[in-house]
Amino acid sequence: MSTTVSQIDEVKTTPWAGGRSPFAVEYGKMMMWFFLLSDAFTFSSLLISYGALRFSSNAWPAPDLVFQSVPGMIEHGAPLVFVGLMTFILIMSSVTMVLAVEAGHRNAKKEVVGWMIGTIIGGLMFLGCQALEWSHLHSEGFWWGAIPNMETLKELFHGAPSTTYAHQFANLFFTITGFHGFHVFSGVVINIIITINVLMGTYEKRGSYLMVEKVGLYWHFVDLVWVFVFTFFYLV
Amino acid sequence: MSSETIHTEHHDEHAEHDTMTKKRIWNVFFILLGITVVEFIIALWLVPAGHVKVTLANPIYIVLTLCKAFFIVAYFMHLKFERIGLVFAIIVPVLFIIGLILVLTNESHHWIDLRSF
Image (cartoon, rainbow over all chains, first blue to last red; front, side, top):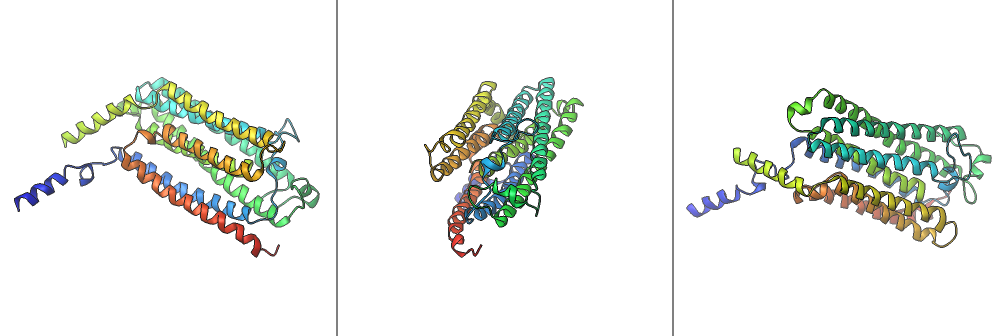
């Protein structure tokens, strides 16, 4: 009997026996991870349905023909240049975010503010680019449930154009990049709130910049999703 | 209770030694940039010039994208330096997503035959 009790006591000393976090992360950070996991499911379901529809189609608007302009500069013949710029901006803003987290570990308030502002500017630049991209496609005639006329469509397909698949492309493109853009927008808003808190010294008083780390996780996730959106809409 | 606090603090101190330094952050950035440049070279030069077929290029894009995802999650999101329990809690559900992707891409190849348009 006594051996059984001592065995139970022994079990209770392990990290998984309750009483403390087996993950050794703070509650909010762990919940951010689980939220991001659920968000990953949402994005995956969108991208998987996109993939399934596209792979089961006989024709699809060719990315190198649809996305070949740089708004305000080049009208034709520059495929992937503009989206390359957008990708670069988002990866760059991810880097400034990690640098903000790194400065937070050293409790360097000024550096945190500087890198956070850099991240916010990066996010706003990305949103601006996406607005230009959307308005360019809109000017061609694409929108939710709307496609360009046959003349324009012929220039967007390698081979015979299909109105059905053009419709599917339009709906999926605006829904998925729109959902991603909404994440970028909310990320920018959260980053601004956190930056104001840093400026007011909230985290200095608290003694840790863990909140910067948590919004950092969200921001990197937004970057992560873009990596996939970029591949499946622009490259494949 | 106090021993727990000490334990966590000790872990944090330990974690700071093998965590992200500025040098490592920029290394990861250049890896991400490099992979993106490779993708561009394939999409803008190798495929149009006929050196690489589209059927080969697409799996390459996906593998390179998963590489980028690994670097972002492991280093930028710091998952590589977390406890193994948290790593599995995040990674294992994602494996099921990959399973669904494989099932549906395979399935969609059969949908073509069912289409009447």
